[in-house]
Length: 306
Ligand code: AHR
Image 1 (cartoon, rainbow, N blue to C red):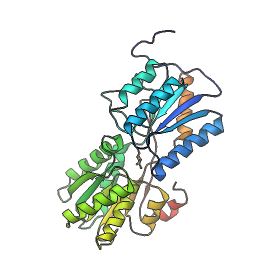
Image 2: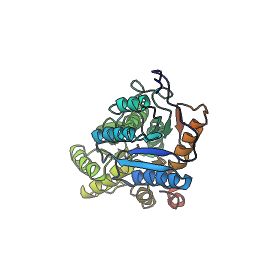
Image 3: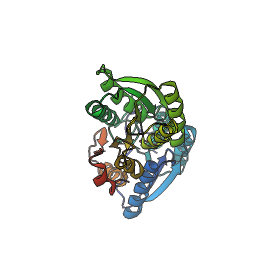
Image 4: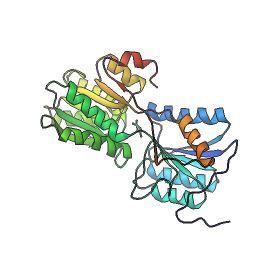
């Protein structure tokens, strides 16, 4: 076969039907399940064969899943990289094997892997902006609630890095607000609950919990109740994702504010693949629009939350 130049992305032939990989990160929360369903539904609708793998929260397994897709000679791969560094080598391996990769929802460290060179493009949310929006809401709406516990997502995941940066930078500019503790809850409900319990004991002055996703926020609500306090009142709870369960908690007053992270990737992912095959020039990032859920808007938004 032909040897690809080091900096050239593999071409994708224009075909009615592709065999496409989707390397998912984990399936332990409604967001991931909604994302997978959207990919499966769209593949089915368009008549593509989806080779689906679930890394079950293991970066090593996700690397192995990618290698297995390369060995199966799929036409293209959608990758939701669990962490932003360890997946870079296998993205390069796919490119060398002539398989274009599109990053879905999570990013790879741009120092290690570049859009238009190593992978085609990134499709997903602006995580920095999500964090900024939470901080902006807090500063505008929190009378006297200024001591913040932050529950971070999976260590090394781009949404954890960026949701922290976006939020912390806005808070740092406001001397009234203080982040009293910040620790990973691994984007998981039970870990979030446990970490929140520990941090609430260590920081009785805390009156805000900012969780990088709904699952940890829901865990934090339980931790606040276990500490004999009222979530949404004694301690404000803020999160990102916008799944039904969390939006219902905004309606019920237990969570105060949620910025959406839209998990419905299918239509955009496959449209991007088609554009790529057609030779259209694609931007480095294709950013999803995210709405939000306030105590005023949550009820109306509930029906269309995932
Ligand atoms: O990458 C997006 C994040 O990953 C979502 O906020 C979270 O729920 C998921 O696991």
